Structure formats: C-alpha cells, structure tokens
Image (cartoon, helix red, strand yellow):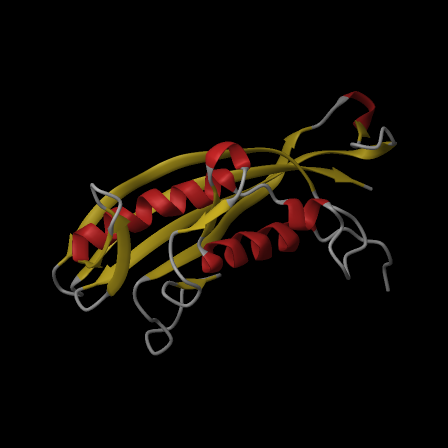
Length: 194
C-alpha cells in the first residue's frame, strides 16, 4: 500500500464543499468573518443528487477536469519551506450550480438606515441573486488554510498556487421544474510534488 501519497484533489474538493456548507467568508481586509447563511440553510452536494435526495436551495459542485497546468524544466518545484522536489502545477476544474425552487426561502437580516435591522424572506429570483453573490464571495475569499497546513490524517499539505473564478452565467428559469438556476466555473491550481 502506498505511503505518504498526497491526496490534493480530494482535499481541495472536500474543503470547497465544507466551506460552501458553512457559508463563511472574510470581511474587511481579511479581519474577521461573516456568514451568508447558517449551516443547513443551503444544501451543498459534491455531485448531482438523485431526485429523492435533492433539497432546495442547493449548490452542486461538480469536478469536470483535472490535469497538468504547468510543467517546469527538470520538473523541479520549490515549496513554501524552500525544499525542492519533483512535480508540476496541477489544476482541478469545477462547475458550480445554484438551484432555487419556488418554495425555497431563507430569512436574511439586513441593517437599515438608523442602525436597526430587519429580517426579510428571500425567495425565487431574489434568493438566486443573493446566493450567486455570496457564493462568489465565499469562493474568492476562501484561503484554503485548513488544507495548506497539512490537515490531520493527510500525509502532505496542499499548496494552492492560484484560483480562477469565471463568475455566474446561464441564469435561467425552467418553468417545467419551477427552478431558477445559475452556473459558474472555477479552476484551482496547486503544486503537485512527489
């Protein structure tokens, strides 16, 4: 059985799903954090669910590609500690879907003029807009710190080099299913050393 084999793709995928489930993002200059939704308000799936499993509103992450992004001369990489190893920059691509049905609702509390707050139910297209913006905030603010430190049970830390988020597109209403939907693409590039 192989030992010390990095599991970077699974580490990244799990971190992405867990972060979307929590709804947590960074606030002012990375100091503190906010939450777009309470854990459990939005169901996050790591693949398309079966019809009896689906619960709205939901976010579906689907890994659609992975492969070598950049290979360097001699396959030499240097990690954050300055150690040299054999490897390359490797990329993993995801499609991210948001789906909201007619019955979906999340109560959002907003600050109003004068310092008070008001809680309002967000539904249908308004909820889809809210989820798109906050999903983008979460994806762009996530620092992957829980996997770059060598999470417990993993043989090697995952060092993220860059991420590319395409933004949401294909916002549609499906009248047969009574669903509002949007999709986005994201590529995460990491150092794959061996």
